[in-house]
Image (cartoon, rainbow, N blue to C red; front, side):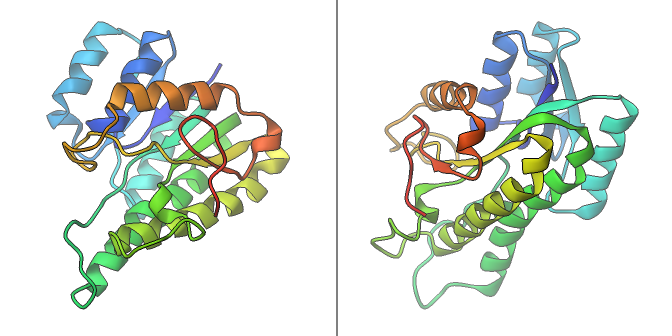
Length: 229
């Protein structure tokens, strides 16, 4: 069985993914911008000796992506699950003050990063499940108000990246899906969110475990219910 690779694993949903995957005995590659500052990941590594590899990754920096791919190849690691979790949200946006940089940075982190990383790791994916953490805000069919536009637009782009990757990896028996984790109480989701990270990740893992080839290219909720594009 291949490793599970989780991006943005130093906090929030990424950290919870690492925690729950390790708890059930899986081997995990956890990436973040500054591994030396990722104290919670370091503690996890001590609790699960030999099961957690922590590597640096800055998305969508092409040199950083290439270096990660080289390191994984050097270590001869195979990836059975890729969780593209790392992303960003620009808070407080209002129509009339939306900035080009916010749109550019959001697209780079939330859409281009997962696409480029998955492409770079394609040779190491072993009949893998690729999970792109999207959002209901990225649903064009479900959009009812202007809310976090840079984030919403970039997540809609991630959904198309998911469909493109689903086509690209279909011949390798890969399964690529976009999953909305729900509104979760994290640094990004805020304290008013109704769902805990533990519950969101537990639900997503049940959905991920149940994925079949028929799910390739779908957009799902944390419980596996379809979300309109």
